[in-house]
Image (tube, rainbow, N blue to C red; front, side, top):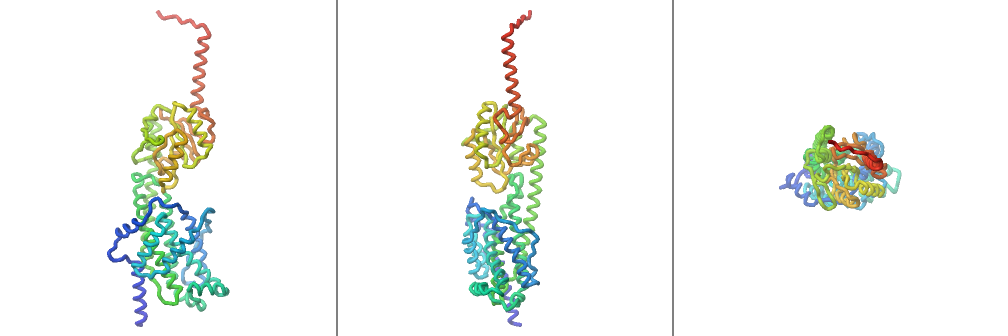
Amino acid sequence: MASMEALGSKQQAVESEIMGVPNGYNEEEILKQIDAIHVTGGEEFDAESLFILVENIVKHAAPIVGSFVPGAQALLFNMEDMAPSVCFNSPFCTLKQISCKMACKGPGVVNAHETTLAILGMLSSYSWNARAVMTLAAFALDYGEFWLLMQIGASDQLAKSMAILKGLPVFAGNSGLQKRQQALAELNNLIKVTLEVIKCIFELEKLPNYGRENVPALLKALNHIRLDTYWLIRTVIGCSAQMTGITSDEDQEVDLSSLTYNLYHILNNLKMQLNVCKQQIEETETEAYQMLMNLFQIRPKIMEVFKALCYGKSNVQQLIDGSNEVYFDALKHKYVLLFISGPDISDNDVSTLKLLRKELGNRGKVVWVPIVVQSKTTINIERKFRSLGTEVPLYIVQQFLPIPGIKFIRDEWHFTNKPIIVVINPKVRVEHNILLEQIRGINSFPCFRKRRIDLLVCGLCSCMCQCCLCVHIPKK
């Protein structure tokens, strides 16, 4: 009995050490520490492809877990296998380094905190979510390998030798694992919640970011991802400690209930934030849509159109003209050709724009409205727009986030991610919209073609009037 009590107290100590926060630290102190090792504008990484691979490993390990320990409530996935990007390269060496960080540390509270900070530091140039995914992937490497060895170990001498070399026990039948059914059930449940939290963060990061004034809840949610990532990594460290206890000969299991409770709290909070953000985004898009519909029913100022289209409740910024900034007054009483596209345009598109700009002359201006799909905009996107803008003499709308009027652009101007030109006349009325690839010079637009015909007819009448001897009798 005494030994059981000692074991219970030992497990309780391990639980508090894994879940706890070091003495003298609170949430604010932890945020200061993790912010100090974060690199802004880090390297790009395909975290979603890596996450797909992690999900596939966990999903295919689930029936193996169930075959050894039916009572472990193995994860059940009904989804089909997803494939990572064909360009994806596994960061295998980094994953092994993370794995070693987790495996070679004891479960003490200071160790768990310091290990989390060490992993965050190793991955300081990656996004917050990428750090969580890479840590989970490092765990999935060991998790998947263990269950693969267990599946084939009974009949394969190579697998047995590998298991011994890796320090994994050779269980007599299933008895070793069956004694750990509850621990495996808790572990599998925590892995499932971890996957769901990361999915929520992916969904949150993909939401269109219309700016602080338009979607205030999104900025708050994105700022909290730093702390969510910290606890995700702490949770994976707990999973790693539990896996070590399960696969060792010692009866040292970790009570993951506190970590599970904490992660469920994070998951519920993320879901609530997602709902609020989606509601604010829908309201922003609807408001911009209705405002644009109303504006084009009256005679608005050109700046009012751009405000509703690109800025919503945010402050209107000046247009970019090369390295300078100009006011919207430069567009008054002129034809405005809105060039709407993403950052990637072809050489043919550039040639068409140059021809269009040349033939347009002083009659109007071309204004590039950048369309950014993802909410995570970087300095690189802004530089790309600016560099492409220097190739053609045009203005650029200084907005490198998704624009509130995107619903209007898609529904009313039929934008489907292919570059289009929308013509707004000097009276601020939309006269025409056309795919850029269909344009063959300025005469592709009926408004300019009609004006040219009117000028020709006017010139012809004047010529005929001079040829015939018209007698003008002066009034008395």
